[in-house]
Length: 153
Figure: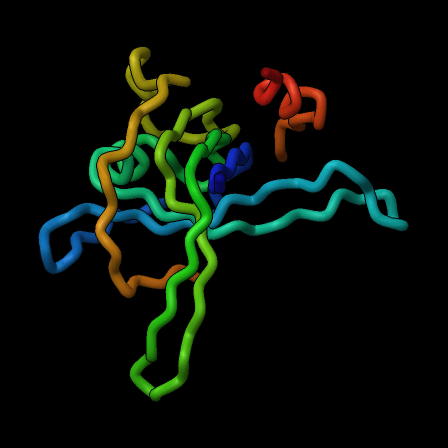
């Protein structure tokens, strides 16, 4: 048996821009800033920047409603991709492919329209993704207990 499931809650690190693949599928690549559960020697939380890719309807929703700093929950799977770039260098990418995304909170001081009530904190299911060679270069805490509650049998 194997399991590949990733659950993240964090903030988008930039305004999101949808791309269209040559075969016509919308895709959005972004990084999610996720704080760690502990503080360093200086008393600050360290942050991981996790690459995420969303396809089709999820990409369209993110482009329309998420801006830099939007708090989102992502459920998906971890994926590695390899390709050779234009200079002949082998590149390996580790990213989360989003299967569900919930918009949790807008960043402070945004001037964009608020999301429609049915989309605010509503989960959207992803359509099957198609592989491409695109590359993309304050947090609400989730405790271990919260995660354990999700997996109790």
